Length: 370
Image (cartoon, rainbow, N blue to C red; front, side, top):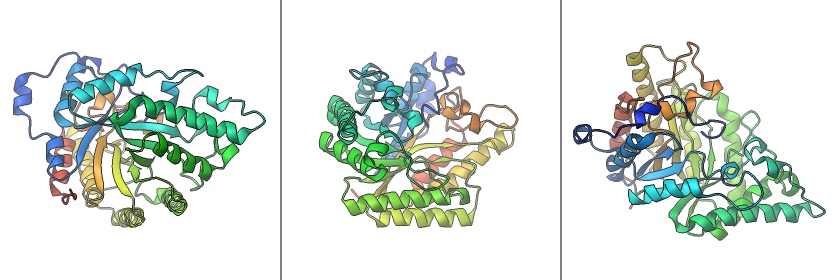
């Protein structure tokens, strides 16, 4: 995802320089948003500062939901103390509303200190640190929710609060004054207070693999603890950056993932796929073989995950290869040094087998309740 996952600004800029020809649009298959809508699901994408008009045109064709990739995170909105800066997301969301898209908010609080504004990490909480921490959280959440109002229908209130290595809650300047669980609970209560209309989501990147067992357990404990407190939280966001952790036909991983989703939905939570893409670093360099492998990974994951009718929103984290964050995240680099092909469209905005796999999984999933 995200600022750690910085959007690629240099590669593929030419892909957005020209609008898609009408002949391409006319020949295109049924839009993914329309396939999803027939089953009661919204289909969307994360939009960043790059991409160009052709990319936006493709997104308008395929999507009916948008989330800002980095532009509504706290460091982007308030890099220094003082008024929040909403100009960039305002432009994005104005465009999205003209296209009839629903809007998600990402994210009110990213738990790791690394992804809080520097000035927040250095904040002087004074003689009454608990009250100062509560006030600072309230000021930020009130400012964001108040500005966007009912335009944002769903918020990632807290992002990545569980340490994947241990399953424990991550500490930051707020948790040090409030306690981690109290801080997370407060963030959701403030979001509910200032955006009572919105779906409130905890968002994280746990996955089906054996290496994610502690991460999944920590997320389940957090959700159970929040449910016991009566915290106003409605859903779990499944980031779904898949690839390394889910080989095709890995029945053990699939079984653990189903068990995890059963426990989440059994607590009464809804599900969202919030940031889907496929890491191809372990697949062959040959495009045809690589794209086929990516599509197979997607079908395995999506057929299982979308079998849960409580999963009602599905968002990509970049529709085309050249704007996907995996291109610049060092941990995702391919051993051969080649660019990743993690998205349903290539850098020239041509559909790939991954798009077909997504469409097939959408058509195969059960109907969602009205």
